[in-house]
Image 1: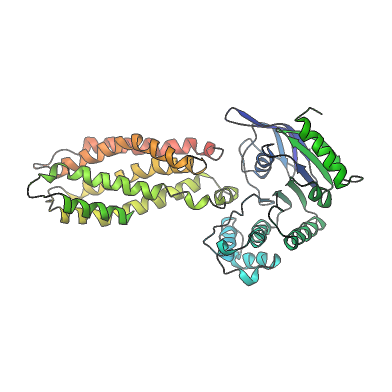
Image 2 (image 1 turned 135 degrees about the horizontal axis):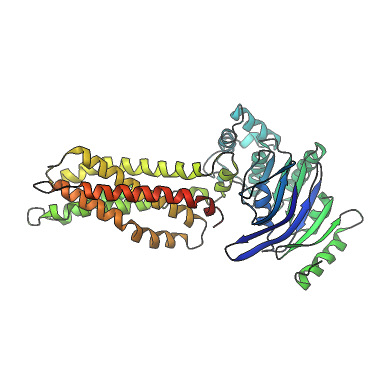
Length: 235
Length: 197
């Protein structure tokens, strides 16, 4: 995934400006940023939900045209699960498997739910799930197409310790298999724990970038605070 | 939708004394006003299922043309509307003792074109309002003025068919066809931009 000088205007508001980043195989980048910084917009552009207003976007060696276009090799986990509350997890995933044109959709859906440990409740409506179970089901949906790149928008929010550990394990095994991950978070501990590089997004601009090697959560928190306290500055 | 339109029928059936009032003059208006309000209830919910867990983004991320989502929503709303009209129209005629003087061909045509006119704009506005905070208000405020041409054409065409001797409904049917064509093409042009509202 390579973004070159990406910009996004929604109406008259400039949401993102001059965003450049690159994540290769088995790479993991964490994007830190306060509310309203443009993190979700950036992820929606990278996933193909929206198109950028300026700049170039390359995915798997191919340049993406201006309009947003999806790619089965990209798994996007948003704030919401993208699952219909009144349907069971199995029905939801079978529906998505059919939508993506996958063969043996029911088997694929059942396997994905088994992967996240939800076989026991796969027939229950999603609306009866706890936050942790819902997140597991959403991860199963993301893994359905066997993606090469995961785009995760604050995936740890609202999860208890067990669910966080499950997510850590899932991400590590995904990365070990050669998958790349871009993760959005508010939490410096999560950023340091799981990623190889961290960048800070403030007011639509990437203002700071570093490898996580040699950094700990306290130092990163101080750096993050500096950028938040002083507002956006051009690096 | 069905419950609402049946309620309107029964309220009018009890409220209007067809022996004293020449109800045939207001019958087409009553029929189409009932269809408009019943349709609005159904159409405004077209995208409501997609909001709680942002399933619309899940649909957008699937391969294929995104216009398919709109056309699927439009087709579903249209079929519901047609089903409601097919059940309610005979009940309207029988409860109000409205004699049938016209031919079924143009009547079916006005029901189909009227339903299409109501759901085309409704589905588009429902898509716009689904992502907005005051979406329901915007839906209502914009829907009624823009549906006035559909109401005028359908009421006049129905009136022409029911009057004795029968009038010519084709001028109004042509107007309805033009409206339907415009509001079928307009969403096709705008729809890509709607995802970013």
